[in-house]
Length: 370
Length: 200
Ligand SMILES: Cc1cc2nc3c(=O)[nH]c(=O)nc-3n(C[C@H](O)[C@H](O)[C@H](O)COP(=O)(O)OP(=O)(O)OC[C@H]3O[C@@H](n4cnc5c(N)ncnc54)[C@H](O)[C@@H]3O)c2cc1C
Ligand code: FES
Image 1 (cartoon, protein in one colour):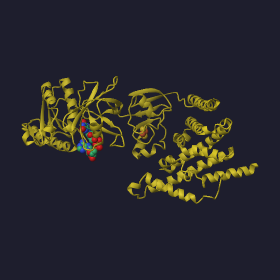
Image 2 (cartoon, rainbow over the protein chains, first blue to last red):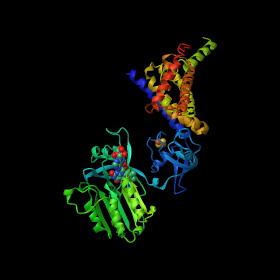
Image 3 (tube, chains in turn orange, red):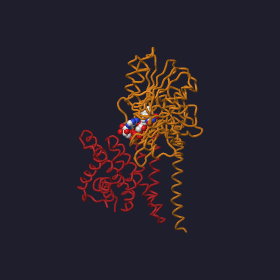
Image 4 (cartoon, rainbow over the protein chains, first blue to last red):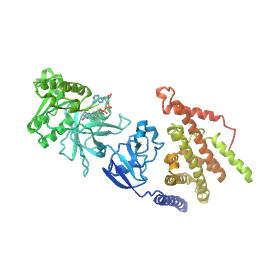
């Protein structure tokens, strides 16, 4: 009996003693009291317990700073601008900073510890970014290579986004990929739906994230996302709108259209949607629905290579050419705002067309899916 | 043994631990931080000093724990657990103290302490101390020497790697590949010291 009890008692006793000593030491030695964290010149202010790292403290305050290494100072993602109170750059931070960042006061937030009051600056859009463990509620096939994923946001959390913005999806490690990757996907669902968001994803052959979403993710499984990000959203003006999208680029525009319908936005709007064949066409009914639901909206699907036997009677050719034809007949073409979404190639040529009609660069908004 | 010859013996152990029996290059302990934190001489020096300090102190603590807790109850087989706990607690404690009372020291040395808790060279030194049945003075000399040897190796490696920044290295060998090869060559060089001194 003693053979077991005594050794175990001794080792446990010593461990407990050391643990107690450490707890005591932490109370006494590492007690930095309360410190003030001032974000963006008092836009937000927190009184927090000192001693933890800036990254941990911000996460506790539900401010999400990108980080991929869990705060070990090896990824260099967690950069934050500290304007006052952080002390000199630490050797663990140096490898991640270039000369410009050094002078600007950029720091790795996982290495900076809160020992005294701190003033930091965080871009406004980062302030509203959160991480969500969503659940893949439903997967719908739109075409042979496009699916819609409906992701429910955990209860009691809500994602506040501006229609047109995107989220980042985390594809975990899986058979075909040894590392985690983040990929951007635009939110396509009705912003009035607070419980879930929907994404429209086109399969990229051998793509890391799309292969995961298409072949591995099952309904009911969870998916890590964070967001919202991006500046692709409807500007609050009254001028007419021209939307141009190709394939899955329809996603953020669908979201914007839902929003316009909810608000009964009276702006004149037209949407040129380019795909290759009738097999690639989807969401036509929904778009027709917007035509009747919105005061002044037209939907023009454009097929670049309709099958000869498909009996397609709509527009054909390049989506940019169709948009060009339309603008030619508009007296006030140069007053339009352009909203473009899709492949980089499509966007480049659309921009050329729009600027050709005198629409200024800063009235053309786009998300390149690259 | 009188004090004089004891000191001499401890000194021999110290130098043996640095050169002939270098814990890193002869025993290959503490490799992971050796490979990952050896990019700059400055950081290597900081980490090295932290290792010297932690090894010297923990080996003494471990010696005491071994002699006065484990041996009397004949539970020496628990030394792994006990040593690990003592090292972890000591590192945590010393980090708190340095962080609180000497920002300058913390800046240069303290931030490396968390890396050291899991450095196997620290535990390795304590276990060698048991196997070789050192007395307290010898143990401290051995701990200090092992730490200094480890530091010398990592600083040398960092110096070489700083030079490598300007070298044309085949793509597949960049990073860990070339570092491991260099570590191997350094170890070969240190074999030259074998037999010069023996601290056992
Ligand atoms: C702001 C933004 C919003 C986006 N929104 C959407 C969206 O709503 N729906 C959507 O389906 N995608 C969207 N994307 C694209 C998406 O983020 C991914 O790039 C795409 O799904 C490929 O990811 P992957 O990991 O599967 O492929 P990867 O493993 O990254 O790529 C595999 C190969 O395919 C090539 N490739 C990468 N992307 C594409 C592409 N789009 N088309 C053709 N080849 C490609 C790569 O060059 C690479 O060679 C968006 C991108 C951005 C930047
Ligand atoms: S979180 Fe990775 S470096 Fe800070």
